[in-house]
Each structure stands twice: as structure tokens, then as C-alpha cells.
Length: 96
Image (cartoon, rainbow, N blue to C red; front, side, top):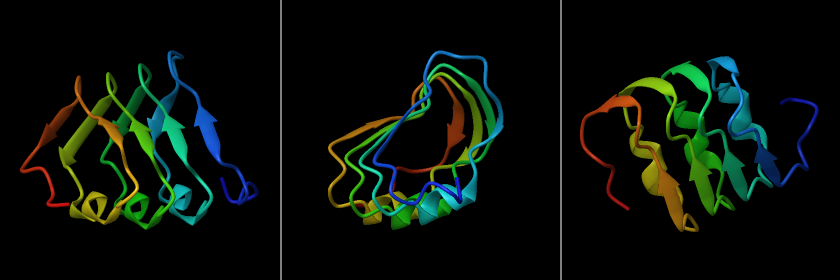
């Protein structure tokens, strides 16, 4: 992700991608739309996602994500759609 700072959209849904969602995604300040649904991403949602101030859509449903929903998601004031279902996330939804 480090070499793609001006990228606005990431559509990687419905593949068989594995691994974790990289915390370096938080450095991609122009991201508006992130769709990583229906893969096999594991681990937690990186808190660095909360620094993506332009983000409007975050789709990470139907993966293998675990842990708490990072409270930094509450910093995403432009977020209009958030899809988290189909994972093993726990805890409370952050305040917005």
C-alpha cells in the first residue's frame, strides 16, 4: 500500500485473499471507498483506518476478522456505509 498514496478506491471483494488488513492503509489519505468483502482476511481491523478522513464506504463483511471494532472508526465523519457482518468481531460499536 505504501506506493499508492493517491489511490481513492480499492475493490478487492469476492476473492480468496488471505492475511491481514495492513495498518499502512491508514496512510492512504485519499481513500474514499474500500471494499474487501468476501475474502479470508484475518486478524483485527487496524485502528489506522480511523485516520482516513475522506472514507465514505468501508466494506469488510464476510471475512475472518476478529477482535474489537476499533474506536477510531468513530473518527470517520464522512463514512456513510459500514459493513462488518459475517466476521467474529466483538465489543461495542464506537460512538460517532
